Image (cartoon, rainbow over all chains, first blue to last red; front, side):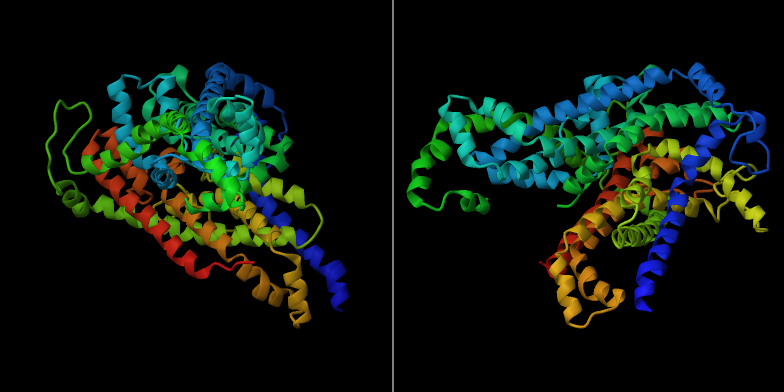
Length: 278
Length: 314
């Protein structure tokens, strides 16, 4: 009896439950694809059908690209996420190396500060940072989108933990070779830390590509809009009238990360777990 | 840090030889300061300073663009506590957290257990359940809005097909907040699942063998005796992270309901955004932020207090 449960009944139950859940998870994606593929008349019919009678995905995509400068928004997203991530690494890596491998007065205080900063939610500092950017006169520029996120306490913490595991002999050997401390960071530590940097990069890019709160606050100009802001704007302009192109625009906005995720699924999930659990 | 001492070589002589270069010499310390300086300065400018700034602003009547401001003591807080909208907003935020956290944690755990309990299609399921985490929430919120459309949406369509009554989910006072909760759970489950999967994989196999020898035969008793206690720390972490993230709910509210109808889905960060950035009442917005911060701090303290007691080490 138990063996039959083991060979047939349990796997069947497992798959049934997981597939039912998967259907709920996928429903919005399926509905999005379905709506984006329908002409207006089919979208506004109370009869439910998933497969469009008349396939209009290309028309809807064309309308979406014609009504909003989607390429520009994607490019903005790319510029902002890449700038943020490179600057974060540039700032965090040397600090992490100093915290992990060098001794100096005040190191413990600095490390305590890093740990404390991880706990500060991004919305908590929004008003003063906004005022600061206002004073600097950089509101409504790329700088306003990038500057506040050049510092990642979490990045410093993660790299520092990773650098701790690098043997001191490796660093001493580099010193013998006459490499400066600065050189050690980039030529010795960075190559060993690639897994940690990748994991952090996934986190950083996903967070900032999808961020809606900050761009909403600091941007006015349409040509600077990042993808989430653009799709929300698109909805406001098209409210209630044009769901086909709206869904097509949504597909375009989520596509880069979702496709990247599909291709590097394993690494993504490993990256999230590596950085997720402290 | 004491753990630095532990990483030094055990042979005392080597350690002593190394100390002058490693620690004492001025040039190393100077390099260390140079290396840590940009990060320290940015941390003070973008995180610590603004945090202090929020606290200071909450005691002023500063309005963005105003030429000057005055210290007004606790008047922002008095105004806030007397404001019905603030209390509604706080209650809605707590309701959202109270629904989304148990929902997303339980479903995340359930999914992780189901995926891990068999060999078939593991990676396919992981990918599907994780998809909502990757997809830009704003874009998906708009899809949800259309799914919840009173006339042409999928949800009401399915309900009608089953002979049930539909709703104007996002436009009715009784359902708006719960609809946002459902979207929140949909989005957070996959993230929790991945954290639980990591926790499950790290449970040593021999514990299950030992439990079986001790007579724990059913799947349930193996779960109760091994899996659940071993997942303790991960669960605590997942609950805290989920709670902190739920406290920050903003995107779906701003795009789908704007806190409405009649404040039924107003939440803290949205109120802060509206006061601080739409009405430019920076001082008042800062006071709301302080309340938000207190809750996040409480959660963090609660986690470390529980964490010290409940951690089960392998």
